Amino acid sequence: MQESETLTEWPSDGADEERPTGSREKGLNRALNILEFLHANQRAIGIGDLAKGLNAPRSTTYTLVRELVEAGLLEMAGDGNRVYFGKKLYLYGMAYMRGNDLLRRGRQEVDTLSRETGETSELCMLQSGRYTIVHSSPGTRPFRISSATGLQIPLPWTASGRLLLAGLDRGGIEAMVTRDDLVLPDGRKLELDDFIDDIARARITGYCVTSGLVDAYTKCLAAPVFSAPGKVEATMCLVVPIDTSEERTGELLALLRERAARLSIS
Amino acid sequence: MQESETLTEWPSDGADEERPTGSREKGLNRALNILEFLHANQRAIGIGDLAKGLNAPRSTTYTLVRELVEAGLLEMAGDGNRVYFGKKLYLYGMAYMRGNDLLRRGRQEVDTLSRETGETSELCMLQSGRYTIVHSSPGTRPFRISSATGLQIPLPWTASGRLLLAGLDRGGIEAMVTRDDLVLPDGRKLELDDFIDDIARARITGYCVTSGLVDAYTKCLAAPVFSAPGKVEATMCLVVPIDTSEERTGELLALLRERAARLSIS
DNA sequence: AGCGATTGTCTCTTACAAGAGACGTGTGTA
DNA sequence: TACACACGTCTCTTGTAAGAGACAATCGCT
Image 1: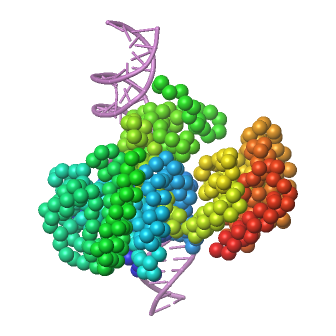
Image 2 (image 1 turned 90 degrees about the vertical axis):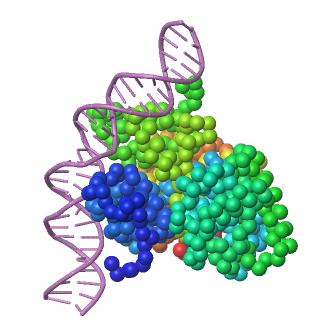
Image 3 (image 1 turned 45 degrees about the vertical axis):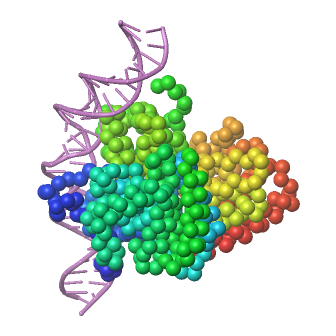
C-alpha cells in the first residue's frame, strides 16, 4: 500500500501469541472487532488493511464489511474503498444517550462547568475495565489539547481512574490493571502499592488530584459521581495547567465537587 | 408476561408471511435485528420478548445478547432482565459524528436556528431509503411535540422527503416509496403522481412547504443541503403552527434557506 | 511495457454455530 | 396446592457460514 501510516496494532491472539491453529472465528466477533478497530484508529480504513490489522481472512472481511455497510453500521468513506462508522451507529448512540439520565445530565454539567471556569472539563466512566472519556468540553485556553472522546486510557494514568476504582478491594483493583498500565507515557513506572494507596486516599477524601501524570504540563482534578452510596459510576474532572495556583486549584476543586455531587443523586 | 405493552412488530419474513422453512439465520444478522428492534421500540426489552419480537429462537437470543453485552453494545437495564443499547454504541456514534462535517455543522446550525426563531428545527437525511430525523432542537413554544430523533418516517409524509428525492428520476422515486407510504397518518391517500410533481416543484424552487400532512396542526418548511451540485445530502426544516402568518412563514423560510445554503458548501 | 502488490469476486470444504428442545426454578393466579 | 407460564442454562445435531485459495482487473513503480 502506498500509505504507510501506522495502524493501531491488534492483539493477534490474546495471551501467548499466534493462532492455536487455523481456528475459525464467529462472524459476529469479527464484526465487533472491526468496529473496535475503527474506533481505535479513529478514521476510515481500507478493507484490505482491516483484514490485515485484524488477522482476518480477506474474503471473510469483504463479506462482513458488505453486510455491515448494508445494515448502515458502516459507511464507505468518500474516496472509495475505505470504511468508517455509519449513520446507524450515530442513531443508536443518540438513543443510548436519551435513555441514560446520568450521561445526559453529565454532559450538560461538563459543558457548563467548562464554560464557567474556562478550563477543559470531562466526564469519565469505566468502559469494559478501562478509563474512558465519555464527554469533554474544551475550555477557552489558547492551547488545550484534550485526548479525544472515547479513547481508552490506562486507569493508573489518571486522577479519575483512582476514583473509579474506589469501590473495589485489592483483588478487584489488581484484576483491572495490567503490568503495562503502570508504565506512564514518559516511561516512569508506577508501583502497584502506591496506586492502591492513592485509591484508598481518594475514596476517603472524595476527590483526587494528580500532577504531570499523563503529560508534564497538566494537573488533573477529579470528583466522583455516585449511582448508589459507595458506587462510583463516573467522574467529572478538570484539566488545568500544572502551574495553576494553590488557591485557584482549591476553588476549582470545590466547584467541581459540588457539581459532581449534584449529578450523584440520580 | 404481566406487561402487555405493545412492541413494534417485526416483519416476520419480508414479503409473503412466515418461514420458508425452519431456516437458520446468521448470528450477525440476528444481532443487527436486535439493535434495529431496540431502536424501533426506544426502550429496554426483556430477552424473551426480544426473541418473540424477532421470531428468533430463545436459546440463540440468549447467547447473542450475552455476547453483545460483553462487547458493550448492549447493557442490561437497571431492573434486571431487560437490555438496551450500551455505552459502546454511544462512543461509536460520537466517533461517527466527529468524522462527519455535515452532521457536526448541521447540528449546530439547527440548534442556533431554533434558538433564534423559537421554532422547532430539524436536520434530516435519507437513511436506508427512509426519511430520518438526525437531529432536532425543540424550540420554545409551550406545546411542541416533535417526533423523536432517529425515527424513520415515510418520505411522502414530509416536506423534507420531497427535497431528499429531488435528485432522482421517476424510477428512482418509485423504488423509494411503498404503497403504504402514500397513506397519511390520518388515512388520506396520496397520489404517486402528485407526489412526484411535488418533488419536481421542490427541486426547481429550492424549498418545500407542507401543511397539515403528518398532523393537522403543523406546517413544515424545508430547505435542501447539497453535498455536490444537484445532490441533496440532507435537509434542514422548521416545524411551525399551521396558522403561522404568510409573512412570518416567508421570513422563516428565507432564514432557513440561507442557513441550509451555508451548510451546503462542504 | 513489464513487474509486484492490491483490489474485489467467486467457488468449494468442513469446522462449528444456530437452533430444537428438555430441564429446573421462580412467580402470578385460580 | 396445583396450574400455567415465564426465565435462564444445557446438550446434541446438522445446515451452513467461515475461510482457503484461485482469478481477473487495476494500480504504481521502474
